[in-house]
Length: 437
Image 1 (spheres, rainbow, N blue to C red):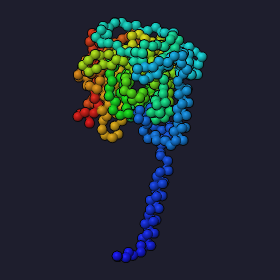
Image 2: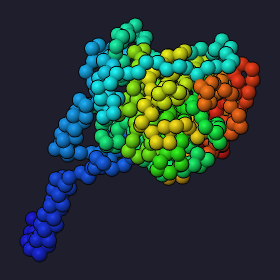
Image 3: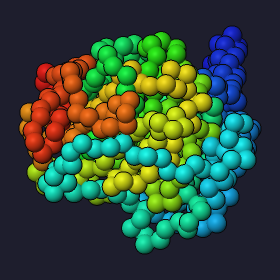
Image 4: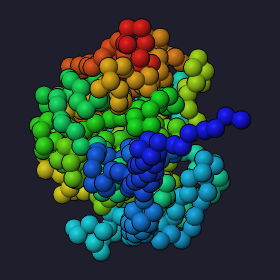
């Protein structure tokens, strides 16, 4: 039987020291805190149902954030007299009109919503509605409605707020450098038509409703009307209304009726829908932020919604109409600086966020129907019966209509005019393709 020699004490000491060092490193990795994105960092409400990016928090941080979220929800979700469950999972609260968020504003406290104003006068009625059908809102399919004296408000959930980059930016567009509308800024891309050079007191259009695919959790696709005044610097004033698909903001892929306003280029003022003190709702049949239904299908039935914004000649407030003559409410004139008098530009069309702009690959998020305008009716998305409101509160056809597409190989626009649709245009596209890598 062979005898074995005694182990070398130097080698044994080295091996033992190495094992102790490895154990120490492993324990440090296990107890080190995970870095988290601080709540005031970043831009506006990005996120998805899978949770926000770079926001892995320790239990104490999670508890503090959850307490802040719940305190915020208690502030913005107002007491209701009735609750309606929408088929898509939304909860619609019927809130007494005088308790809506607008009346938290110091200049509106104690007031009641105003009576309806005089609508703009139309010189010619259109037969276009016979060729298309009107979309409305999904929550109304429940068969319930909000009683008179209340307004329907889509309830904000914990998940909605947690998806945002911060509570402070929830309900607001990302802060980004503002450039002129003929160039992209912050990954935002447009395919639009616009008029400028005059004083405008409102705008109207019927907007084709689709469900464009949004491929990144931090992107959106929208179709809207912009009323714009001021420079394209930090004093930019806008009123915006249309439909939007935003998984980060709403938690799903439904097209939703939305509004937005700002007086400082999306920095501090303004918000989406009713998520801050500003817009005063007067209607008990429309829930801003709720899903639109039904939607158009490729080579199938087409649906659109009419949207009009105009300045009341008597009181100066900007009123919003949705669908077939339903007054939704108004933005008080004191909210604005440049828009207190009139708009300098009216813009109609689509916008997407291309979050891949920094990586060198274009997003596949769709605009409109996801098809190029050359495909035409039932295939490409459209705006029809474009009009503006003049100083005399009259709806007029557009003059000197211009087109602008930031990246026409990704999303394009094509305008036209006929006796049924008046001024119209097709727009949109698939995003990334052979010509838009």
